[in-house]
Length: 349
Ligand code: NAD
Ligand code: GLY
Image (cartoon, rainbow, N blue to C red; front, side):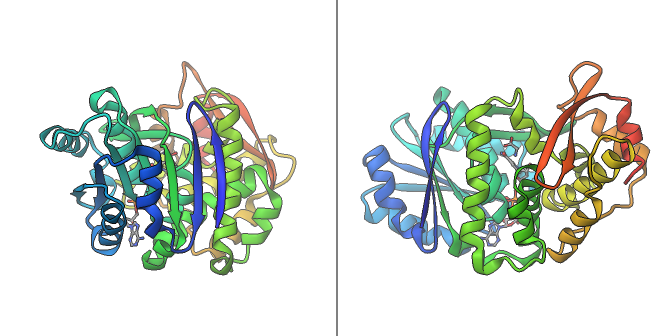
């Protein structure tokens, strides 16, 4: 078992290990006393992991209620968010109670935002059940839902009180979802850690997944501690994401976030080298690593479609954006570029 302490506006532990879901009850009692738990989960995760979660909470003396929504990115919406808020109100959830986000990034992002809004904030914990949520979305306090104009446009920084990552939950994850999570792992390798990148480049990762998750969480912890509110270094975590958000949007969310990040990293690496911003051409290493981890490396959308979609992305500030450039594997920098350069970058799709 690994325990990583995050130091942000709230201090909390990220606990990672096999079988630890059965300890959720006692951990929550020590954090919140015998409060009520509002468990939020989706229609895929509920039949797999809800009973175990409830059983542990209830045997520790915590009463539970559950809100189950239809699985998928479409549910990361203002409609589901407000259904959840109404559900909490109808059930008289108080500030002494807490929410449990049991699921992937969609569940975690929406539950975190609802927790920040309900009664002007109730505590919540993250129980990531996808690799993507384990290595990225459950840690660091970014919460959001999507708006019609784009992803994550309505959100808040709101830290959880605990992240409990039971690696056994990954056993039920479809292969394509495991691959989506690997895109974020590869991303950490390119930005910060060549050793991590080398470790995952042949795709043989499952036997060492606890250590791999822990390494990603340490890297995220360090950057969140420096820049919780995303004004500087945290933006490095957006490597591959400028074009990824466009790919998701152009595919009408048919291409999942992880797959889109995989494609976005290839475009960013190719463009950065061609435009003279990188020291090394990282493209081949990223393409091979993506392929070995069952991730896509290209998309069918035209450069114009991708650039137009990127222009509506929230990272645009005035006439410029911070684009993440890989100098070499293990080192990225932020480069302020005029938004028009998005058209040049998209040419390398
Ligand atoms: P997701 O939550 O939709 O989960 C992917 C799929 O896996 C869903 O169908 C879900 O029902 C299913 N699933 C989850 N756990 C399972 C399990 N153990 N067994 C079987 N099926 C399971 O998506 P995701 O890939 O986890 O997260 C993507 C979302 O996270 C996007 O909305 C993205 O914007 C967001 N995100 C947020 C941050 C952040 O910092 N907050 C970072 C990265 C991504
Ligand atoms: N996933 C990007 C961030 O947390 O900043």
